[in-house]
Amino acid sequence: MNPDDDEYIGYVLSDVARLIRTVFDRRVRDIGLTRAQWLVLTRLYRRPGASQTELAEMLEIDRASAGRMIDRMQKNGWVERRDDIEDRRINRLYLTPEARKAHKEMWAIAEATVDDALAPLSASERDQFTRLAARVKGQLQSLAGAVP
Image (cartoon, rainbow, N blue to C red):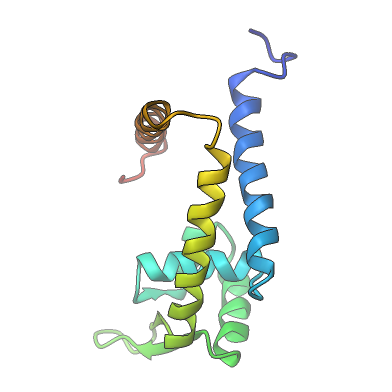
């Protein structure tokens, strides 16, 4: 296997990630979500009360860009800012009930997208693929110095 081969693992992994995001983006567009919005919804659903700085790090964007995105989402009723009880300079971010409803719809679309993507695999192949991908992810997190 060499880097010129379309089946080179780096290309395959990159293409799979890109294509699943593309299919998912198209599907959630029907419920009115952009990629930036669904990324914020997902991160804040998993980490309610994150600060703007923490959200920016999770999204791998600068704090100013995160701030503008949060401003728009707050204006549209998706996110609320709450004061941090220990540090008045920090706002904690939470999803609104409307955003939680959108997240539920989005999650159903995500599950369907993954099911469609993995349709060529048998149940045992799917389980094996998931376990192997999780091991690779753990290894990469270790290499990156991240906490899994």
